Image 1 (cartoon, rainbow, N blue to C red):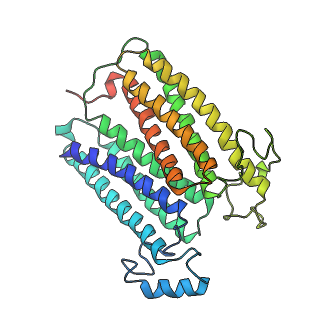
Image 2 (cartoon, helix red, strand yellow; image 1 turned 180 degrees about the horizontal axis):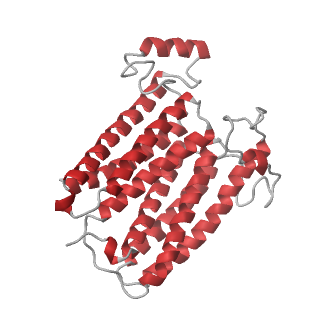
Image 3 (tube, one colour; image 1 turned 90 degrees about the vertical axis):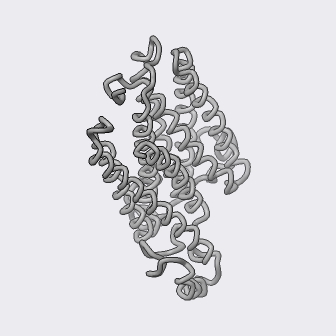
Length: 331
């Protein structure tokens, strides 16, 4: 049962991450402007009067509040709450059954602390009105939860050690995972600052390889959405800097992970995960280009977020396969 709950929680976390991306991309993050309920109610149905009043005050459903956006936001909260209960169950079982399962319960405990911090970030996302640094950290927290649950799930299976060359590849796989996390953070910064269409041509940006950019204000972390730290309106040059940096990061990370997949494919026992990384890289680059060509079509943008999550899982699997035998469960 312990293993089954972990496997289910890992898959469920992927769904929560994808739904979270959908909420962000449909601008539904303030569909219910309080937390954890919706105007103090359990469901948007019970808050229908308050939602209708807010829609009237904002002049129509084009604003941040609508009954549909409220449902999007609350559905994500219901899923996240369920995930929190699953992880609580995993942590309790890890401690109670630690002698039988012969694993340290500290990873499961770390997951519980992480999901509690995620809940706080979810609250601050709403109460601080979608402040970019908070929303980006919320995205990274979801990805971290997925990565740790994947690692915990992999610990439940005894696997054979990879072939010759695995030890030399280990630090490069760790670097690949770190680079991917950095690129996901950049992608989150693009999304939370609404900079995905700051450049609408390819492969150049505004017809130039080095367009006019404002890195200073674009990468100020402690500021409000759409504003500089001084309270001025965030310039288009700042949005261009954010978008351009993510593009450059995509080139660097794609090149490195392609090389890493090629190296892993040459090690016995790693060919399947190497192929998965290669396929996901092609898919992710295609979806990134598709975001530009389709004008950030919702289905393409959500798939791009899902692709990043799957690529993260693949890198965790690779690093787990390369981990020293002492980190594997006892038979």
